[in-house]
Structure formats: structure tokens, C-alpha cells
Image (cartoon, rainbow, N blue to C red; front, side):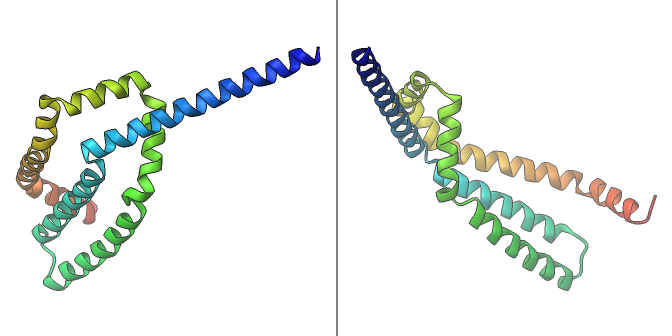
Amino acid sequence: MRRLAVVSTVILLAVAGAARADEASKKAKIEELFQLTNVDRMVGQILGQVRSMQTAQIERTTMTAEGRARAREIQDRIQAVIARMLSWDKLKPEYVKLYAETFTEEEIDGMLAFYKSPAGRAMLEKMPVLMQKSMGLVQQMMKEIQPEMTKIMEEGSQGK
């Protein structure tokens, strides 16, 4: 009986050790995927693009110069909070967990193989340009609907 307990304990420890090794392997692969795909840089670019869109929106408003200056000051303060709270150092552990929960190790292996391939590298190299162009497209569309949005906001503030 005692021998069975010892054997069971050894098996449980071996299984737990293997599971930890698998988790460490998966985490290392996820971190390699992040490095290959420059996720940290993409997070920074997205925050920068949001800031640019907000700045452009402030500049398009009918506020006085003083009002725009105040809006830019508020925007700067908000952006500082966002940059602090959404820094890559804070996001990375959470992203690792999300990827580990969402993808199997086999799927991560497939993604790594793709991003190491010529097609994957081309996608990574060209994606920033594609994103910049798509943001420009969205900004242009926003300019086109801005008069309608302004009218709706003015009507709302007048109680119509």
C-alpha cells in the first residue's frame, strides 16, 4: 500500500513537471511570436494613431482657439494615463495568457512557421503601411461625415 502511494506521488510529480515544462515551452513560443510580429511596436502605433485622430478631430471643431487649446491639454492628460496603463510591460503578461488560453501549442507553431516564411515576413513588413493607409481612409471618411455629426451634436445640445 505504501509502495502504491509512493508510485502515485512520483507519477503525479512527473505529470505536474511535464505540464509546467509544456507551459514554459508554450510561453516561450508565444513570446517568440510577439517578437517576430513586433506586437509591442504595433500597440504603440495604435495608440499614436488614436492620438492623431483625436487631434485632427479637435482641430476640425468649431471651438475657439482657447477651447481647442484646453481640449488638447485634456487630451494630453488622457493620453498620458492611457500610455501608462496600456504600456507593453503591463499588457504583455496579459497577452501571453490570452494567447495561451486561445491557441494550442500546435497552432502557435503554425503561426511561427508562417511568420518566418517569405509570405509571413512580407506581411509583417507591409502591414504598417497597410494600416497607415487604412487609417488615412477612415480619416477621410470621417471628414466627409463630420458636417452631419456636427449638425447632430448641435441639435442635441439645443434639445431638438
